Structures are given as C-alpha cells and as structure tokens.
Image (cartoon, rainbow, N blue to C red; front, side, top):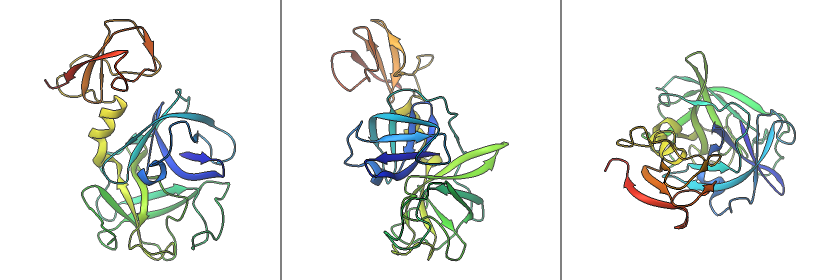
Length: 258
C-alpha cells in the first residue's frame, strides 16, 4: 500500500508494483509536477513508518490510471499483479485511507489503514463504466470506497499471496455519498502490457535478451537497453537519464519488434 502525500498530507492511494514504480489513479496525479509530492510505502499509517520516497516521473495511461516513478528504489516488497480482475462474485479486498464518513469533507484521512471485503459486481456501475478495462466492486450496504481512497488497491488472494486487481477510480453511479452503490476501479491486469512497457517489466517482442533500462544502473557508452517498447543505445556515461526524455544520452534504435 502506498500513500501519495502533499502539503496537506495524504490525498490518494497507490500500489508499489516494482521497487521504483507505483500505480495509482490518473486523476490523482494529472497536473502534478514530478517531485511535487512524495509517496510513503510499507506502512499501515500514512503519517509515519515505512519509506517516504521522492517522486521523479509521472506517466499517464488510457483511462483513469497512471504510473509514478520513485527517485530511488525502496526496500519494501512490491505486490504482484493478478492474472485478471476477477469474474462476478470474486471476493476482493479494498484498502485505503479514505474517509470513514460518507459525505465529501465530513472528515480527514484516518491515520490507520482501513480495509473492507467486497465482491466483483455483474451490474450496478453506470458512470461511463467500461467492463473491458474497469471493475465494479461493492455489494455491502452503506460501505465501500470513499473520498481519499482514489488510486488505492483492490486485492485478492491468489497463488498463496495477495495480488493486485484494481485501483480506485470513482463512484459507480456518480453518487456524492459513499456506500450508496458499488465503486468503479481500474482493472490493473487489463493494463499489464502498458505497465510492462513503461516500467521495463516486458521490453517487448523482438527485444530478445536486451535488458530493460533501470534508473539505478550506471551505463557506459554503447550499452543497449529496452524501454517503453523500444531499443536504445547509450551515447555517454549516464545514470537515471531516461531514454526518450532528451537527445543527449540515448540514441533511439527503433521499436523492439522491428
């Protein structure tokens, strides 16, 4: 679990999916500047414990999903992505520091992490709901995700561990009061190809044994890496200089499948 924090404290949740990348909701970070907020990971209290990390990069995806790169790797273990979001009826746990009272502004973020068990719903979400890329989660009366839970995880048990299925997006029917209807979550496994391309988890077809770029690695000239579905060759010695961010350190060798 991750807490996105600005000058007023916790404002959104997220999930650590690699030592340097957090997945969250796009509406949490759109318009934010990299380095303009911090992320605490590895704690059940948003204001203490774990690791408070600086942010270095924001990548916006399709729909209400985004990735945030940390300025340095953290020691906490990332959560694995589930194979899919789950069929209707699948038991799912929602986690976050959202309000525990139902109307906007009725209270601040609770210090202690909250959780609730719900199920994937076959119906009940109507606010521009896309079943191909989103999940409808709820089923309990007067309980569910609320303000401040945005970006935070939906998880389920699988393969003997907790796996990530969703990231909180919005109310299922556009309702202003929490708990009146299911909530819409981004289906994180449905975005796996994009996530892998951005984070280097899957360099892409045709990259073969080319290693994925890492912000922590020192690269000498002529080193080849794969990043965002493309192959790159280093021009100068560099570390933490992302391929594609500027022309000075990397030469674009083309798409991985070319």
